[in-house]
Every structure is written in C-alpha cells, then in structure tokens.
Length: 516
Ligand code: HEM
Image (cartoon, rainbow, N blue to C red; front, side, top):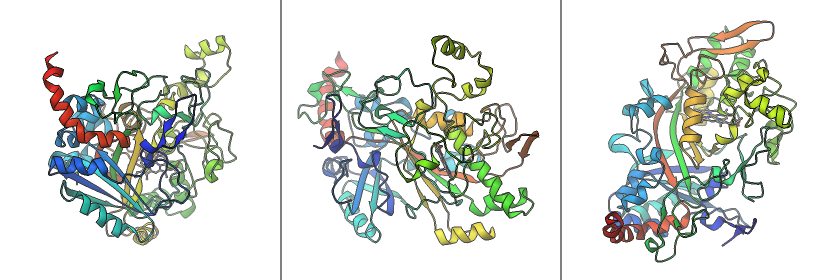
C-alpha cells in the first residue's frame, strides 16, 4: 500500500477514497447515482468488492473513477450492527432533512423546504451515493458497467447529471479557486498555538477521521472491540490502539442540489444597475467577492498567505481581509468573505504574551469585528461539487435574461470530518446567518430572503463606501433554491469492505454486547 511517510505514522493512501485528495478534474464527465438497498446481502456483497478509486497517485491518470458513500439510513438498510451506526456523529445519524430546527438553521425553509425536495427527504432519502467520473465520451459505458454490478442489491431513486468540470459556475464566475491545502505530510505540530495569522494549511484530521484535527483532538467516530473485526480488516485507532477504527481514512460527504436562477440573477442586477452594463458586473462581483475571472476584490495585488499551495490559482488566492476591515474593497457580506473570512484564531496583532492577552480579552477595538467571525481554521470545507444543466442555454440566458429551459445549478459537494462544526456552521452561521459581522442580511447568492427570527428583512446587500453611508441593494429575490440533499459517510476502503462482515459480527456480538 502506497503511503506518505511522516513521523512514523503513514497515511494509508490506498485506503482513502480518491475524491479526498483529487477533484478528478481531468475526468470531465460525471454523474451521481442515488440508490436504495433492495437486497441487503447482495448490496453488501457489491460494496465489499466495488472497484473504488483510491487516493494513490498513478503514473497515468485514470480513465474512470468510482467513489461510494452511505447515509445512516443506508447503514441501517444494509443491516449493519446498530451500535456501529450510532457511533457516528449525531447530525449524520439524524440526516440533513431530519427536523425543523436543522432545516431552519440551514436555510431550508420556504421554497427550500425539504418537503419540496426532489430527493433527500421522506421516502426519497438515498442509502448509497455512487459517484462516477470518466474522461470525455467514456461515461455511458462506465455507468452501464457499474449499474449492472449494482442491479442485484439496489434500486436507483435518482440520477444527478453534471455538465463538465469547467471552471465557471452557472452564474458565470470562475469557481474552485480557493481550497484548503490539506496537510497530508502531518509535519505541522498538532495544535499549533503559534498560528495567529490566517493560514491555508489545514490538518488532515479536519477532513479525514482518525487523525488529529485543528484542536489536536481525534474527532469521535465508531470504534469497535477487536473481536468485532476477527479478520483484521480495520486499522487500529491511533488514539485507542486496542480498538478497531471504522472511521479511519473516511470522512463525511455533504451533497446539496442547488438550482440557480441564472436569468433571474442577471435580470435583477440589470435592474439594480439601472441598465448600466459595467455597474451590473461590478455589483455582481461585489456579491461574490471576486470578478467573473476570479480576481479577488480584497487585494488585487495579493498578499502572501502561509500554506497557499503552489498552483496556477495561487496568485488569486494569496490575500486576506486584514487591510480591508470595513469592507470598502470587498463587502463584509460578499459570498467568499462570509464562506471564509480568512481570519486567524485570534485577531491579528503582535506575538507577545501581553499583546496576546490584550487581544484575547477583546481590548483591541480595531479587531473586534473580526473577532466575531474569527477561527476560520476550524471551519474549512473541501469543495468537490460539479455544475449541472446546459452550458449553451445558460450562456444565452445570462445574456438575454430569458429562461434557460432545463434546470441549471450546482451539485454542491463538500468533504469534512465534522459536519456540525464545518458544513453546518459555515452554512448556518456565516452564509444564512442574518447577523453576520454586524450586518442584517444573509448571503447575497444563497439567501432565501425570508425575514429572520426577529422579523428583520434579510433581502438586502450592503457595500460600504469610503465617503458616505453604505450603498445598499434591497428587495433582492431568491436566486438559489435547494432541490435535494443528504449527509453521507465516505468510508475508507477497508471500512467499506468491513461492512459485509459488520452485520454478522454485530449480531453475534449483540447478546454479550447489550447484555453487559
Ligand atoms: C449555487 C450556489 C453557490 C454558488 C453559485 C457559489 C459560488 C462561489 C464562487 C463563484 C466562489 C469563488 C471561487 C472560489 O473562491 O473558489 C465560491 C467560493 C466559495 N464558496 Fe460558494 N457558491 C455556492 C454555494 C456555496 C455553499 C452552499 C457553500 C458552503 C456551505 C459555499 C462555500 C464556499 C467557500 C468555502 C468558498 C471559498 C471561499 C474562500 O476560501 O475564499 N458555497 N463560491
């Protein structure tokens, strides 16, 4: 098994699903099959030998890739031992559409209500997501092959198509520029207390279970007594070496189908700009925080940021908002500033003990606003989504404001080790939150525009001005509608194989396990 060597603790890349390390960008075609179990034994048998793509780099890039993830309903339908399912995070066990309070926090209200979803709620919660990727022209054959393999164990409830891995998302902005730089080498000291500035290098344990996270802790996950794994399929837990680690090398995968009203977005910007084409582009860029070509508004010249991976995009990613505290260049409420405020653990300042104490106690008034949205390092997401809908129709719709015909949008996908602290926090506190950084508005792209709990309107967007009151857009309509979603577990490949024995072992253990 290929491994990245580090301090004697190798990362077992052959056990990690490839999507964690690669976006499979060269595999321009993709579709996501959402399945329900019809025959648990046949379904487990397929999972035990499915040709899942690992994170090992090969000399020649693969022609196709397959990744497999399961919901908690899926684990139950596979008849996996109940205590194993319950060892996962509560929000995964409950599911994305499980209750009204979660729906409210995530912004799944009004037309986003799970009751209206195409999939992900009620009888239409998928058990397994089969993510298929292929080089141009190769997807139909690959999909047919995998569907034939799955036929005995599963029924398909939804097929999410995609339209290429190109850079532009449907509104027309470059996407996929900013990603955390995952620290596969595990060289950085765990719980780096000296990291007081924003950095892009992020602990592996923020994305993969079984490794220390940014708190220097191991995220809870199911650990089993070794008797439950007599075949020795599972790796032992680093933090509990006498336990078999079901989570090791796995992570949570969040999918949300987000429909974008492309003509509505540009029509509204035309209205707000009074028909001025330059102004419409500037307003759109202010809402995103980047121009359509991906140039950040905050620091067009760039500023060095520790851990920005050397790649073509790095110049477009080397910036923070430190020199723009009021949001004069990039509004505080711009989508990318909300989604990643690029703040450090503490507001910026000197490194001395006194200075640290001063800032910890909040006496640095200039940094107070930043303090409200601090600790970005605990809320990073690895984004792996793909857009869907017809590109040509979309371009025509953006130019003319006419309907694009078929639905268009993003299958938003992110990978995290902690759904609550990462995805749910970013989505609810930063994006949908109507009290972010002193503003009374929610994300300009994603907001549902309904009044908040205090009955305050959330349909505005503020652009601070150097020489006067904020310029404010109001009455914005909803541009993005949630059409489906679910929380999945993307297991390590050993754990996926283990599921086939988990039921037998689980049931055999049950008598003694519950009896004690
Ligand atoms: C249809 C919905 C969405 C659209 C059109 C959209 C669009 C964009 C665009 C154009 C960028 C800039 C490109 C980049 O920096 O990589 C971006 C960045 C980002 N988006 Fe979204 N996005 C959507 C939904 C979401 C959701 C649901 C989340 C999280 C829950 C999210 C989180 C982020 C993050 C974390 C960044 C990177 C920010 C940074 O590090 O500077 N986005 N998005």
